[in-house]
Length: 142
Image 1 (cartoon, helix red, strand yellow):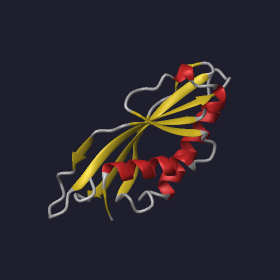
Image 2: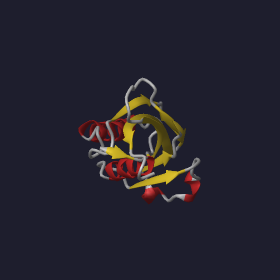
Image 3: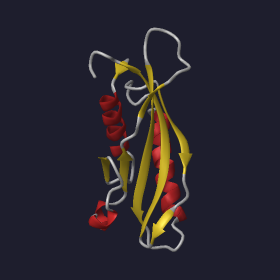
Image 4: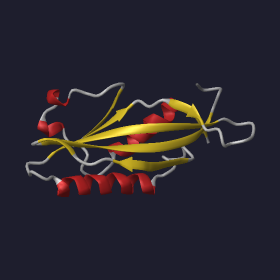
């Protein structure tokens, strides 16, 4: 199960695209301009490209790599307090990652590190999830 950064992030995007209620998944190097998106494009999961680091507690011959992926989840809700939509999206994403915590065997583990509160201006809201991904580095395919 040796992978590289690209394949792990591609598999993460593929898994997130199958989350119930999510319309699109987009990878980006910085924050997207959500005002350019139509309401029909939401809910949208934005994967902000993470930095990669070697996981140093591992001893042995293989490199164990760690990614801290930041997801920003955008959605539309016409309520002043979008708790129902937020709760449903958060649960669906968390359940998908929990049922596929190895991302189809492309990672050792993918777990939710933190979840932010809802932010935004009516009707576009967002919240962030930070994921910790660990995988063995395949140095021949990087």
